Length: 148
Image (cartoon, rainbow, N blue to C red; front, side, top):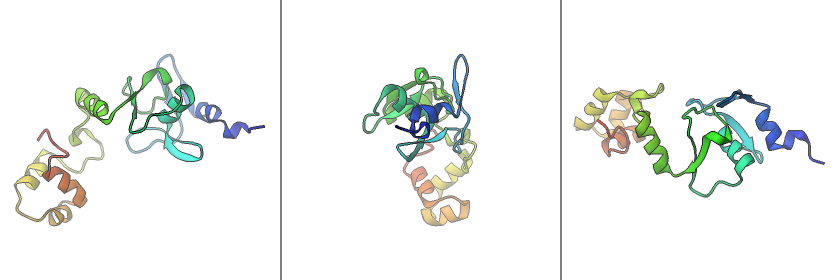
């Protein structure tokens, strides 16, 4: 007989506040406001666990996206499967794909312009600005901050 503690549905609902609309995850949240849970003893996003519990498997290379755009929501009726491209298009539509809108952003349009106009090696720029070399590399190669 399986313990209720091993039951994903029980574990999901143990940390959910259900309203008429969103189901708010009340457990741990990551830096972006997404719920942190586990499924089959592996750490994963709470909204992905909700999808797995209510809808079954997630196809390879697929994301679970929020129709409500509330990262802490785990209401299966507010979730859909999509691609990374779908996720980025949602972010563009909402205006949340730019670093300047993120609470944790270390760059701003002025720093991005400085990086792109500098002749200094990207690793030195990263040290100077206080970000990772990957961050500077992505700016230089227009993998981030594409709107600037």
